[in-house]
Image (cartoon, rainbow, N blue to C red; front, side, top):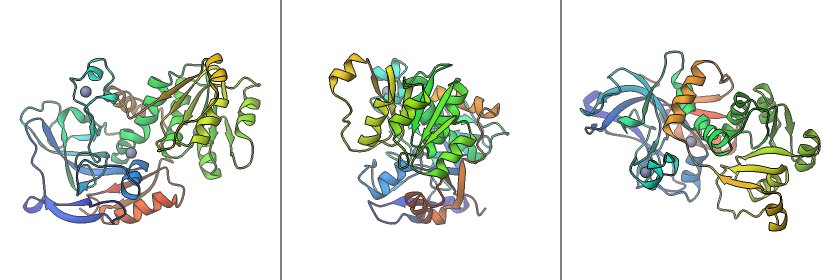
Length: 352
Ligand SMILES: [Zn+2]
Ligand SMILES: [Zn+2]
């Protein structure tokens, strides 16, 4: 924090390169904490912002919604941390007062904002966060793994457990085995699913899914997905489908792969309409089509506990690490899927 200055990655608008510039280190308000960012993941949501139409809160903005680091300064009302603590930052800022927050559904808070999307985020040497958004990181969990927990694990965790309600002995098919799907496989295993069917057009992603618990793999470019899922499940289909892509085609295939009474959780984002089955079939089979967005802070706590107790295999989760100065290269590699990344991590303080 020399002279109160830091380097931060500013996004100025669609399809413009991110600019790494010097700016003032922000000062925490009374309920805020200043974090020296050690690791920050980048994901498909960042690609939507940088290369597509997804909106940010303002411009230029500091992106980065998957951060972990060390507490550098603490506002006077914040009691849950001290300077020097290792923490991760849950980027969803929920109001705590709206109808949904009060019902315990903070992931659909009516006033939710995300650090790194609507507010400045973690692609900087320092970032501000509300004190209620930080969680202690045990020494056994690295900063990179902490960054994974914030979204790459938390998003599918919420989708599979809270929204999909996957139970012991059930079967699941996971469509799309990149960053979210890869961790969803492990979450399904922790939940006690008996069949975990990974579906992806990329053989490397499928093999990786198999290493962490997928019982069966399907490449839709090589075989008919619905037929293959029916074969694997003795003709009846799966209890739960997790759709991580957001494509009309895969959502439809997902519904067709369900057991009677089955449920499909969609967490893939896209502007395409959902177009699945005639109501004659959808209604009679009592299917459930469920959306899932982000996570709740209580789930972050549960995941930290699971990671601490080695319930996840995160050896294959971090594909590459880059310093902040290479942010454009990192985003391009993620966009091109170069090296089939699960997560790419940026280390804003790597050169210190
Ligand atoms: Zn993300
Ligand atoms: Zn709220």
